[in-house]
Length: 359
Ligand SMILES: Nc1nc2c(ncn2[C@@H]2O[C@H](COP(=O)(O)OP(=O)(O)OP(=O)(O)O)[C@@H](O)[C@H]2O)c(=O)[nH]1
Ligand SMILES: [Zn+2]
Image (tube, rainbow, N blue to C red; front, side):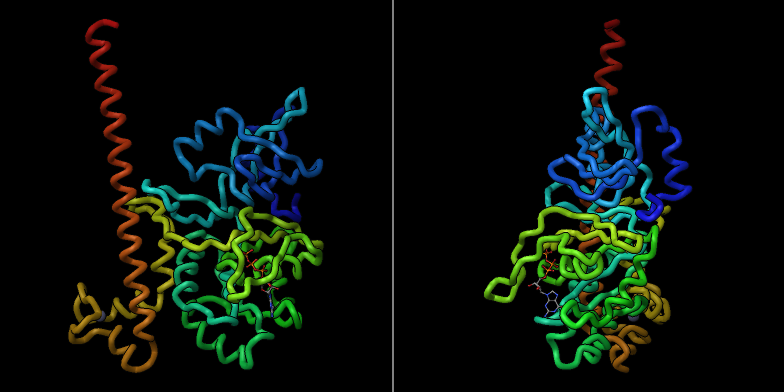
């Protein structure tokens, strides 16, 4: 358990659940609400307890996710249920595609999040930047992992270019074929440490899990004829590694919406987008005008950096795009909060009326 990341903080959170029949465990996989959980007594399957169903219906973010530490209860008839999710240390949260602005946790309690992008074919700057915002938002430490180094003539040159997409993060160039860079990546997998992999389908995540866990633990499949990954991984998995630690594979998501975790809350702990674009934030602070739009304004530090070749116009454009998207998410979430408020007010009014009638 300690090797999987169980520590004093989780143990503390667990203490109020510590009674006969309960055990702590870490979620390795979720299939339609049934969780595969690693416990000190072995791997078990557990469904959500009744009270959890209520909690999840109100707040989809509280649905157990891969990497969560949970309370498993074993019943007399050997059935097992998940009674609670212990507070998360980090969570990768994406916005769900539906109309309501809801978030979905795709991996919990990672210490480091690797944005995985293949050098071949065509690595995508914009995708790295978007995933970086998600990774910084998670509270875990982001890094950039560029895969399939064996497939391009000059991986280091490409890596140099792509590192501009995550200026504050370590960048590793790896190949599952030659083994290049795998030791450096394994540094993030000490006993008790968890590394989550986040990237497009076909980026080579499952192959990395296999290489690092040293076994064919994930089903990897061939590429389609057009060179794109087949969309086959629908589950997420946490895999313990032999020398301690765990790797969390996430599904290769097509669309990864940014999720604004706490709309309108000034106390929001991290703004992943601002962190992922820390270089631009710092430049913008030096513009002559506070409300500079970095468009045609005189004394604009952002435009000056582009002129000097320190920043690409493409990165500025993507920053704006992601900011617009975040603003949209924020307005959706605010609308949803208002709707919930209205429902509550209506409910209270009905109760008051009933009381006034003396029911
Ligand atoms: N040349 C080369 N090919 C690789 C490397 N790593 C992975 N591949 C190939 O890339 C394809 C996709 O790899 P996967 O590991 O399945 O990709 P994934 O990111 O897990 O994809 P999803 O499961 O869809 O999320 C497979 O055909 C792998 O054999 C590498 O280092 N070099
Ligand atoms: Zn400016």
